Image (cartoon, rainbow, N blue to C red; front, side, top):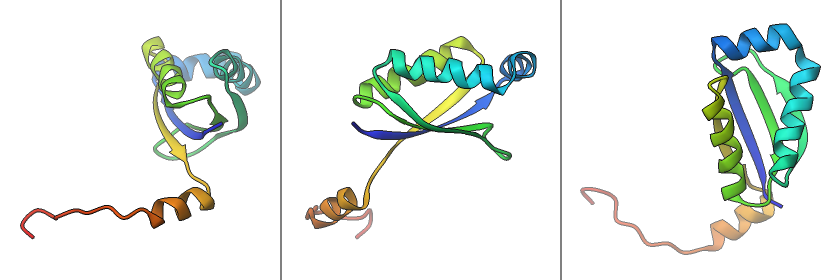
Length: 106
């Protein structure tokens, strides 16, 4: 199953909900969200910086990961960015592919 990194930033209402309910309740809600899409959570961390939370999760496919992000975004409580994570073996396979490209102006 593909692995994704989901980063999110809370809106004011999302931050208020976190303050009200606490971190453990959010972890349970996030696990429920991802599992409802057929995935599983590897780890969840709150971070200091441009993002408020980082989640590493497995999802069945890109469409499932996008549906999770869209659902969260539609709630108005957070904005999400989702990136598929690649293993070293996947990068090795990618590096072996020969793609032709002409840069602009070249």
